[in-house]
Image (cartoon, rainbow, N blue to C red):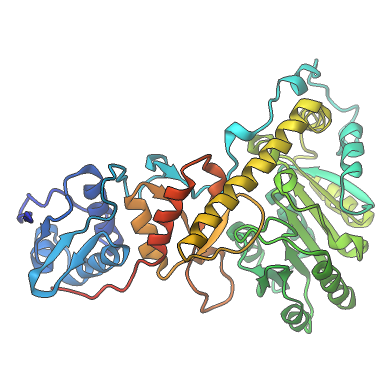
Length: 450
């Protein structure tokens, strides 16, 4: 038997902001807290609008979002009721709220802290916070440089160390991209890359991917006009998990060689990628800047990435950097060198690499069994197609799961809906997670009520 909420102070919920999203947030929060229970009947839209001091249009739009997510059901003259989204589950959490309140926050894109290597052995070798002999000393400590050259995907001419991959990319953009320059990126791609390019005043040109990487024909078309740079993620692409194949990399290198453009490679997964390191530098070394992050493999707070490229370009970037912070901490560089050389942390990173792959594949397999096909083969994220992004996000949030909307990753117009899910954070419960994601992927199709 359904119960009904009454108006004037007895709604049991109120939005924090006077918008449709605010209404959806408030109702989802009330569901999570148990104020609104499955089967309860909501007042008519006009009654709710009068109680909250909002327009009926705003409340109706909030109802639309909730209904598309499956949180409420509207049945014409019979009214609108709270739906039973997940029978038997007590894990309703705050919807559309701060990530810290999610049971499973899979929106962050960061590594699992439990899979990061132990720093103790590397730190024991540091007896002093040694300073350089001069402020113009080499920016890379020799022992780290030797280790990088042993494990680099091509014989690079010059190296430098930066404060993470985004710092490296920002330095390159400042040095090489001018206002109005065209820059080619993958579609989709990491939103912060787009933000950096747009801040620099670049014209961003998107080229779609398939399961082997950036598509050659659209790239060639994009390069028919002058392009300052081509920005790619060579493996464990964020958000799709796609990695370049050797065949595709060679084709892209041939196209870019002819155009004379610079390639900026963002290897953000680094040592936790299961795909072998790959770079277009194997074919066009004088046109490539290759960046490897150590954040996901060794810890975001190390704030270190290595960048290689032609000596003239790296020297220009290093000289420009001397006007600011000068260099990345040599203390942190020596710590990283210890982590790359010591047997125990090397084994721990290898274990993390295999564990991330297990987690990713487990969720993908369970999703496939439920009719949801997810591409890519590497990394800590999956890129899930959904019928309605907002509906999927609200539904999962109401069930205590935080995910990332796909729209900020897209470059080309008219792209179908997706959500990015950082499954690398999930050690277990993969089947349960896949079931909830599969349900959310189909959420949508609201028909308005009164």
